[in-house]
Length: 313
Image 1 (cartoon, one colour):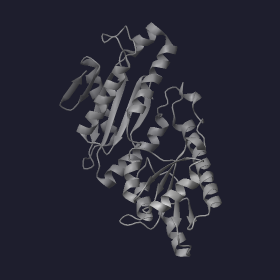
Image 2 (cartoon, rainbow, N blue to C red):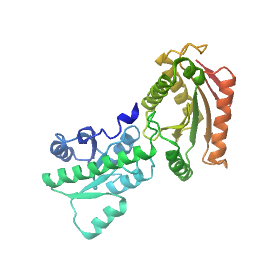
Image 3 (cartoon, rainbow, N blue to C red):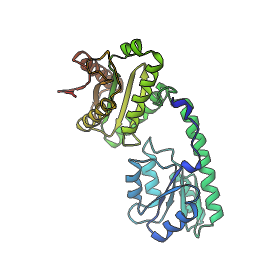
Image 4 (cartoon, rainbow, N blue to C red):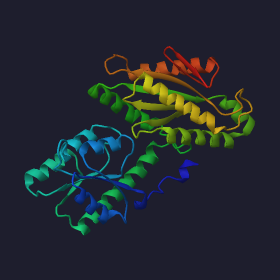
């Protein structure tokens, strides 16, 4: 199960994102670090933001002087995203003035190195901050991760969801919530036993987590066989497409379930969206999603229910 995997990450598993508009500088940094960590390089602040939409690096090495978005501006934009706020960022700068140093700290960096880069200093600072990040990630898993399924737990939901609501209001972005339920799970436990039931929940959770393509999208176990998927900056149509893909992915696992008319493990899902300009509370949106889940289950299961839509496989 998932709890056996907690804490197994090492420096070898870490990815450092190098952000610099100069190809020669990117090459130097990669060469100094490639034997220690995996390196990915991009040529601009916007490229860094686009990269982080779909993958979360463990550390960012950021040049300050770049056209369009400089290092300070890029860092401030990244820090506004709850899912990216804890990525350590080390600035690479040619200025050692007090003014520039203070600006680095104010932007949200954890450290900075001076150009020309000293190899020993760079490697040790990167190693130090990555080791700190690994310890932070482990602590987060121990606090926020459901040990059976690997999904986030309700403690995480209580801390994370209010920040997402504020982020959506600030950036005028919708927030979609999808509640899933494993169909006929009590019958599954009765037929196959609780150990196989636990294994089923782990497989379903693992499959959904792997099918979520953005770091900001989160899977939360909210009780028993019930899960919540949080989709920030996602409208109704986008959330529909994601949810249908998740239902199909679990269906295609073809996990046997002889007590179901589908003869395999399936999911029912209810979807609701909070628009940035509406006055719904997040509790009301959760209730809407839960009501739609109930309609999906009473309407035949193995389907998504949302306003004006019922989708069966």
